[in-house]
Image (cartoon, rainbow, N blue to C red; front, side, top):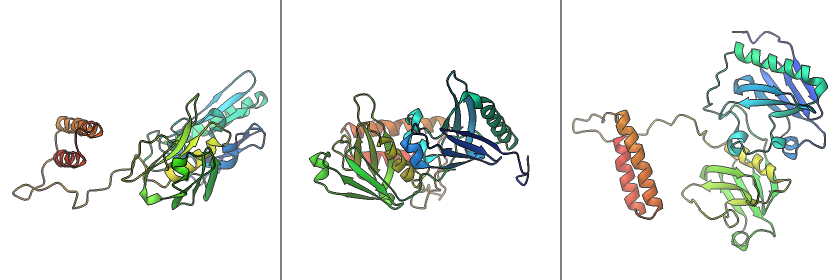
Length: 306
């Protein structure tokens, strides 16, 4: 293993599209000032990507320009988590256009990053916590039929004159972070509008974003990608989807048998069968065949056997 006290050679590539600098431990990505640089990248600003967040780096040559690409470990970045691979190439902060006369510099940067990645034995497995902090706060974006603001504790949704009456009549929405279980950003595609939607604990809704008071509808305009920054800022402060489950509290512990011993865990085959049963119960509940009370009772019975 290389000592972190060593002073490795600096690798840097400067382009109109942006500047990437690697010092052996961190890759700093600074968007360029060229008019072709996307609004999302300019708004997000400089990113400091630790070596431990990288899964890989590649350089692709082209006739008119080349392209540097970073691949991050799953779960390392809340922006990528919130957007689910749906960011357009132009808005992708982990991509850099390279002019032909700088191909050699790009290849040198790739070699330096790959060598450090190999020497430090960085795993490529999914992360169980975010290694990047997400966009800086406070954050406010106006797009589609409303404005979404986030200060780290509350999301505020305000509607403009283009919002449906069902939403505007409900007035400004304030959603506490503690009450949110998920956030979803979906870009507009073809004839389908996009959205920024928040899932509120114990208050799920199946209403289309156009009528959902917990969602901003997006129509494919220039500022739509900025709503992804709001999604990322919230995502960074929600429990990580791959984090280990907390140990059960006494109230969650399975009941003991007559001699006071906790029941043995179900065998693997039984465990799979119980998971299938949970899915079946969920489908029956969604279809209206099971009432809320029946579903809760049946689910608890299955969980006690797991």
